[in-house]
Structures are given as C-alpha cells and as structure tokens.
Length: 414
Ligand code: SF4
Image 1 (cartoon, helix red, strand yellow):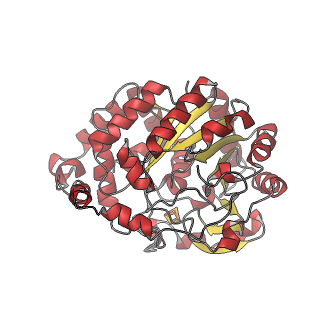
Image 2: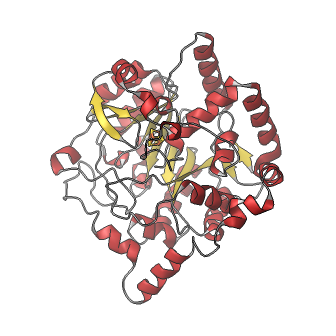
Image 3: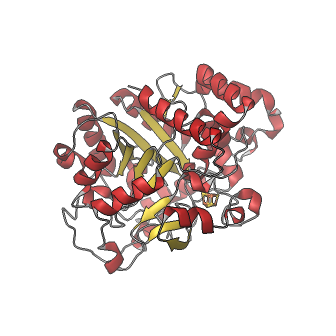
C-alpha cells in the first residue's frame, strides 16, 4: 500500500493554497512531542537528557489539540520520547484522526504489539517504527539487545491488523550499506508502506559524538545506501529530498515547515535546536530570526545538517514553487531511485562522485573497530550508551518495554 492519494492531495492543495495567498512561511508537519520519557537511551539521541521532573511531564490531549489547531499543518508527527508511554496517547490519536490530520506516530515499537488494541486502523494513522539498521546493528544503535526482533514482530502484527506502517531510520558514520540494504529488503517483504531515511543530527548533548556525519560524508553514504536499488523499496520521501541526500540537488532549510511543540511550548527555531520557547505558533513565526538558520546563514550548527525535519518541507515547497522542481519531481517519480542514480552519475564527473571519492574504509572503520573492541568485551557504541542513562522515571504505563511517495511530507527520524 502506498501513501493514500488523499494524503498527497491534502498536502498538494494545502501548499498551493498557501502559495496563491502569498503566505511566505507556513507549516507542513507539526512535530508534536507529548513527552520526553523513553524506554530506550540511544547513544545518538539528544532528546532525553532532562531532569526527572521534566521527563515526568505529559502534554494533555487538550494541549495537543490546541497546538494542532493553532498551527494548521496537514500532517502531525508524534515523536518523543516514546509516545506509547503517554497514558492518553490513544485519546490524542483519536482526537487528531477526528480532525482529519495525517498522523505519524513514531515509536521504537517495544510496546507497540501490546498496545495495538488501543488504536483503530485509519488512513489518517501510520505507525512510524524506528529502525537504525539491520539486526544487531539496530540493537547497537539503540543500546539494547533484541530490540530489532521485537520491532520486526510488532511491524508484522500491525501490518496484519491493517494499520499503515512506515519505518524511520537515522544513519551515522559506520552504517554499512550492504546491511542497511538487507533491512530495506526485509521491510519491503513485510509490506511496510514506505521507509524514511535521514542522517543523524549532531546533538551537542548526545553522548556518542564520534559517529555524526559531515555533509560530504552524508552524500557519500546515501549514494552507497541507495546504489542498486530494488524495485520493491519504497521511500516515504519527496524525490528532491532523496536527490539532496545524494548531493544531486541543493535545498536550503525551511525550519518553519516543521515547527515543534512540546512540554516547554513552541520551540525556536526547529526540532533539533532549542533556542528558546514561546507560547503561541504566531509568536514563533513572528519572533524567530529565521535568517540566522540554515546552511546559507553560516550558522555552524546548521552547516552539516541535512535532516528531513529541516529539508523535506523545502523539497515539497520546491516541487510546487518552480517549473524545474515540478518537472524534476515528475521525472524522478517515473524513473525511480535507479533512474535518479543514473541521472546523478551522468551530471557528476567520475572523479567528483562522492561515491568514488570517499575512502572506502572511512565508513567501515568505526564498525570494525567496534567489533574488535566488542571481541575484547568493550564496544565504543555501547560505552557511549552508558553515559546516556537518564534518571529512572516511573512510567504511567510500562517502564520496560523503488518507489517514491509523492509529493508528501514524512515524519522525522531524528
Ligand atoms: S539546518 Fe538543521 S539545525 Fe539548522 S535550523 Fe534547519 S533543521 Fe535546524
């Protein structure tokens, strides 16, 4: 099953409506973080390092609905924390479905199978399952053994019950393309609707600072991840964003396209940076100095950022904002990832291709060195996990626990 036509139509008509009315900055996806608690402590995560009193907080359903109505974005992504730890998450989802919002509920899936009965399949609801690699690669990324198998079992159960299911994956230096492609194969065989892929953002608070990617490393890695694509792989991204990830299209960040609302209020300026909070969405739009963000601004925090929560909205805006964008999107959609790769290779001189320029061992070395350390009883990634432990917080539920989608915005994996 692909992204419903109704979702594509909703996004397309929303963007065209804004453009016709001359609105300069408008949201496409609301990032609604109803809590920061999580039942994992991943080494690359910069979201969970709060004191216990913050981790205990939940946004009420009414606060969520107010934010959704205030912002007006057609798509609502619910990351966290782990949203399934929120005691009223089913009420929040039901209220958003009733408001005809397309929801991506991001989950690590540890609790998904057990909690499926709390939700009803709907074209408005998609579970977006976090998977950062194949098998124990994912376990290592999330710092716990066995999580990949639990997630795969939950995905199968959700698909079987008729839910829309996507995956979201964040990749770092050390991701092995062949193993990531095995994950793409397995997810395609299970029948997920689409896969979302993104480089990790270099959170200052994340304990593992050694595996974040520079911009050049990102384009090189994603070219290798997407090389020899299977026809069965479906990516839940705009074609221009996938071209951007591979260094074949230039996109400037549009942080207002993915505004973030959480227990602190509306977060300036984006999902990744926290440079203040305000009480209303209008205040966010009016008082944020948007020119200070994005690569062109020269802000060092934005220089290597290519995450989809900053750039997927840009891809959609570009699709509808220029003839070149529209024609290229149509071409890539028909040609698929393989056609896009041929186009990328034709316009990039062989000597300049990131694929060829990158030292082949650069992405493998950290993994190999991890495995050597693992054989010695120490994994550098697992060592980083230990420093991401947050204060224990009692939970309200359980504590333990090759096609494009066009033209659509997807939810974050960041
Ligand atoms: S480039 Fe990245 S870090 Fe900077 S504002 Fe955009 S999304 Fe945020």
